[in-house]
Image (cartoon, rainbow, N blue to C red; front, side, top):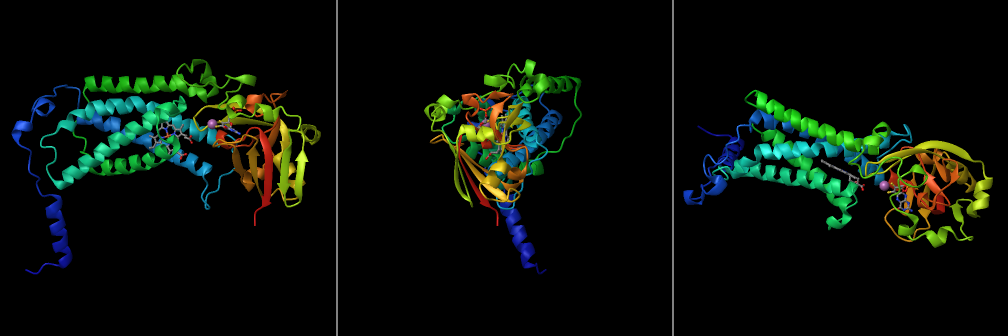
Length: 395
Ligand code: HEM
Ligand SMILES: Nc1nc2c(c(=O)[nH]1)N[C@H]1C(S)=C(S)[C@@H](COP(=O)(O)O)O[C@H]1N2
Ligand SMILES: [Mo]
């Protein structure tokens, strides 16, 4: 019989892939590797599968909303992000953190339900089996990393993370999703129904997830603010009833913003203008009700008022319907001292260089003398203590 070369190749690959690996000597089979070491009647494939389904959904939502947050902050050329609905980012990032937090008890329960398999004997039966277990190990590590690093981030425990959170969390998000897809493709199928006992356990895990949500969602869902006992921030905390991420003192801007020589330099095709506070106040003032929606998952809405960015863009000699503005803070350093405002947002009449918050002059910590506030943007892009605006027309 003549074999097709392709088939021969496949057969050979299959042989290597499924070749049995030698088992380690029996005398190493000690401790948790002993047969019959684990006995809990509650562990079951049905339970594991259900937990996995919920966890998979939660991680899927985290991945998509996280990726969205990433491209909004680092827009690739093809990406377009609208300025309306004004609360869209508030919702997607709120969902990211809410779902992420709710996934913590699911992850703990899932790991508890499968950890005896860590001690399978023999550790790897075939090359395929070894690869599958490797993917699971990666999945477990990446899941723990995402949930733990995410929680440390929202509680601002940067000292406990000796790496740049955003980059690590972003790349491990990809790793997690990749490992999860492999796992979904190779996992054992569900075989049994859920016993009463296991159903009760599942309910308990669901209740834990629900309580965590109830006690944290108030950082972005206003009606739940009074019970946001576990949330790092609540919408009404802080000066002028709004939380602060970086204070004026921490940013080192206090002497600069109180200086009578404070100006906004407005640079554009028409040249450079220097606007002091009196000049800014003499321009037409407009109000906008907009949230600050921090990437860390808290948000708070207030009435802002000040000068429309599109009016300033026109003063700089550019067409406000197709201009890009770079807004820079007087802050000397820091990752968030500048942000780029794309045409969609420049054009929007709700995009303001705000001078007031809830009718009062801005508090120093909220960006006095002037700060950017625009609809549907992450908080990190709402630059405080504005010192320069550079306008160019899109070609
Ligand atoms: C308790 C769970 C989680 C919390 C509290 C959390 C929190 C956060 C926070 C605060 C950010 C914003 C980072 C920043 O721009 O400063 C973020 C971004 C992100 N998260 Fe999570 N996260 C969690 C779980 C996950 C999971 C499970 C995934 C993926 C499977 C994920 C994927 C992402 C991605 C891709 C980003 C964008 C990173 C970037 O801007 O470059 N997160 N997350
Ligand atoms: N210049 C400057 N602007 C900044 C920041 C900063 O560190 N420096 N932090 C940003 C972040 S992360 C958020 S969430 C908002 C918070 O605004 P608020 O402190 O007025 O609530 O300001 C943004 N503007
Ligand atoms: Mo933020």
